[in-house]
Length: 345
DNA sequence: GAATATGATTATAA
DNA sequence: TTATAATCATATTC
Image 1 (cartoon, rainbow, N blue to C red):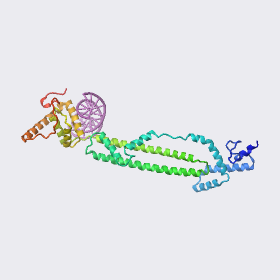
Image 2: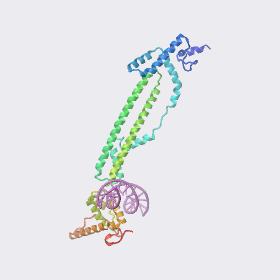
Image 3: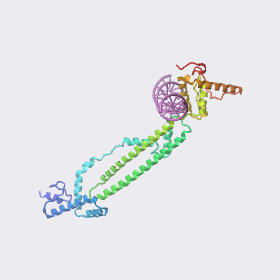
Image 4: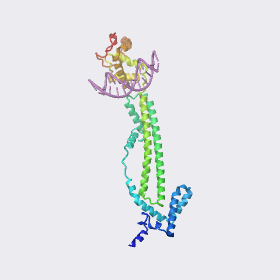
C-alpha cells in the first residue's frame, strides 16, 4: 500500500497521480519546495522557448547553463517519457518506399541520350541514331551533327555541375542536421534511429529536387533533339547540275525509270547526294510525272532531244553515252514524245 | 503573300 | 524490302 509513493519517487520518474506523465517529484503538490521546483521547470521551459530569439553567443551560454542546470536530468526524464508515448506514431511513419517509376524513366532517358552515362560515345551514338532514323547520312550533315553533340555536351555539363552542387548541399545539410541532433541529444532524447530517419527525410527532399533537375534536363534534350531533327528535315534543293543528271537519267529511261542499286550509287556519286536521296528523287519524280504527264512534256522533250544529241555524239566518237546502266524493260511510263495530246487518266 | 516546286517522311500494299 | 501515294515542310517563283 505505502509502496506507491516510493515508486512515484523512483529515478525513472513515472508519475501515476495528478497529471499523467509527469513524475511525482516534478508535480506541484503545494508547499514551498513544490513552488520552487515549479518555478525551476517554468524557467527552463521559458529558456527553451526563447532560445531561438537570442544571439548565438547568448544562446551558447544559455545552452551551457541549461546543460548544467540541476533540474536538467529530471527534465530529460520527462522528455524521455513523453517520447516513449509518442514513439509509436513515429514508428508507423517509417517505411521503405519502392523506386519511383518516374525517376527511373528519367534516369533511363538521360542514360540513353548520353547525358548521365559515360563521357564519350553516348551522345554521338544518340545523334547517329537520330540521323539514321531520319534517313540518309550525308556529308553536309556532319556540321549539324557536331553542333548537336556540342549542345548535348553543354547540357550534360550543366546537368553534372548542378547534380554535384545538389549532392554537396545535401551532404552539408545532412552533416549539419546530424551534428545538431547529436548536440541536442544531450538535452533531449534522440535515438540514432531517429537521426537516421531524419537523414533519409533530407535525402528524399534532395532527391525530389534532383528529380526536377533531371526533368528539366530531359526536356532540354528533347527540345534539342527535335530541333536537330527539324533541322535535318529542312529541305534544300539539289543543285542544278544534280537535277539535270537525275532528269537525264529519268527521261532516258522513261520506259523503266527504276535505277538499279548500282545505278543509284553512281547517280548519287555524280550528284554528290546520298543513295537515299536518289531513291527519294526517283520516287517523287515517278509519281509526279505519272500524275501529270502534260506538265512534264516540255521537260521530257528537252531531255529526250539532249539524250539524242549525246547519243549521236557518242556514236560518232565511237563510244557509249555516259549514263549509268540499268535494266531497261518495255511497258513502263508513257513517253510524251509519242503522245502529243495524251493526258493522264 | 499566295501559288507552285521540291525534297523528305509516313502509311500502305505488293 | 521496295514502290507508291499522300502528306508535310520548306524553297522558290510570280
